[in-house]
Amino acid sequence: MTVVYGKFEMPEKIAVEEKKSSTFSRFVAEPFERGFGHTIGNSLRRMLLSSLEAPAIISVTIEGVPHEYTAISGVIEDMTNIILNLKGALLRKIVTEEQKALRAPRILSKILNVTREDLEKNEGQVKVTLKDLIDFSDFEVFNPDHHILTVTKPLTKRIDLKIAIGRGYVPSERHVIFDRMVDEILIDSSFSPVKMVNYYVENTRVGQDTDYDRLILEVTTDGRVTAEEALSFATQIGIRHYEVFNKLQKQTLIFEQEEELEDSDRDEVMQKLVLRISEIELSVRSTNCLNGAEIEFIGELVTRAESEMLKFRNFGKKSLNEIKAKLTEMELHLGMDLTKYGITRENVREVIIAYIESQEEKDES
Image 1 (cartoon, one colour):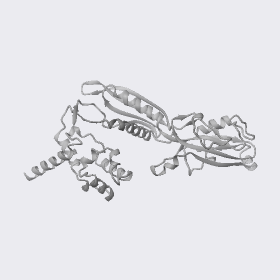
Image 2 (cartoon, helix red, strand yellow):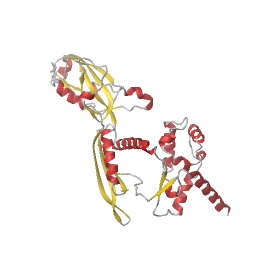
Image 3 (cartoon, rainbow, N blue to C red):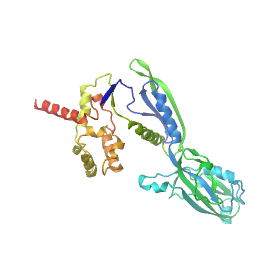
Image 4 (tube, helix red, strand yellow):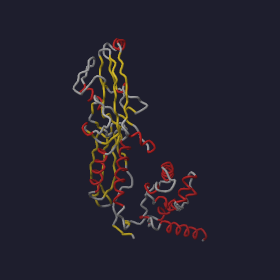
């Protein structure tokens, strides 16, 4: 059963108004119904700041150093300053679904060996940076020249860094480490790759009305993800959380449109929707999966959500990405709202067949 609701003004695409670098972007979306700018903007801001994951150092063990208030012979910085420097490490590691085990904390060990010759070459002071302690094969280091400590005497020490993947900011006392060593020093960890998020809501015009919302979202990251990636990740997290509430759905909402579409506009879209899956260039695997799900037309495909597609038998991320890329070429996407064309999930095949028959009648006449 469907229930008809009045029209909601909603943005159809998002614009990148300003992009100073890969770490900062200003996004603009309009129009929203009055009040929805704050609803969407505030929720995205909270998710961007608290929910994105990245690696961070959670503990350090230095040979011969029992606690964080110790001075190290031959090192200018004391342990308190060294720990502060370690907090500034920017690490990145993409963990795929096939590599879930790699989410467990990793211990990276390094023997720091500074000889008298090293000191003579560097005027008596050897500066140890992040790249000297972390192997690039394990994690991608975004600030390899970040200063950690300065050695002034010949020195050989083992340094163990424990790195974990997490979210937000976690103080040292909240780290759960089951195999903690005696001399292991826990560190407050800032996992979030997002440094700052600001959002603004301005008035915008729709027709003669000027009280609709224009949402401006400014995202600044530390470089481990781009601003676009950060916004995409936060959006996917939000959608995932809303899915559980959608399980209560007993009636489907369709929304009225104030203006009827021009026939030519509708025909342009319908000509894409009535294409059969066999008429577009997909791999045999993807085509067979869609046939098994009894999806014959593009119109039937675009009404499906991504999460629903992944439930099909033998349908994986590779097939999903292939289909999304193909739909993007056609200026379509999964989860489309086709109600403005008089199409719902329930009647899509019926409308498509009726459209095909009407076109055949026109051709015959």
